[in-house]
Length: 118
Image 1 (cartoon, rainbow, N blue to C red):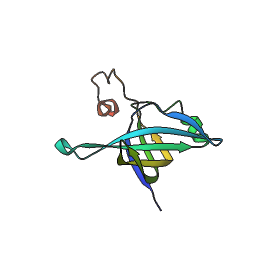
Image 2: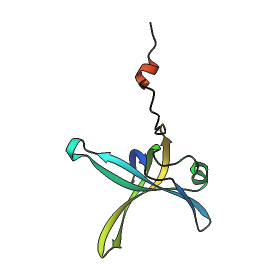
Image 3: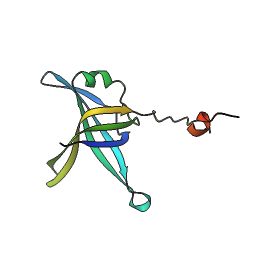
Image 4: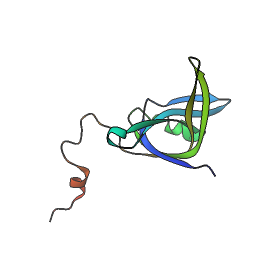
């Protein structure tokens, strides 16, 4: 069984399309690996199919944090005479995280909000 899970941020607003009568929602997800000088960003092209694609279309926008699980595949294509590789994930499960806000949290961390004063 091929099952891959990744967390990251959506790179651009999701695009809803029709594939032979079946709705498909496409969106790129950036996920970081490593840290410091070795930190790299890996891009996944995610696709969500069917009724869930239609339901999620308005909810998935650039900057949205997501956790996705599905079947990972690799596709090769030609660009400018060079062979390139694309990682694609057919999404089976998706969980949404908090939206990225330009206003910030007003200086209060989530840990501070969750603490009970005594």
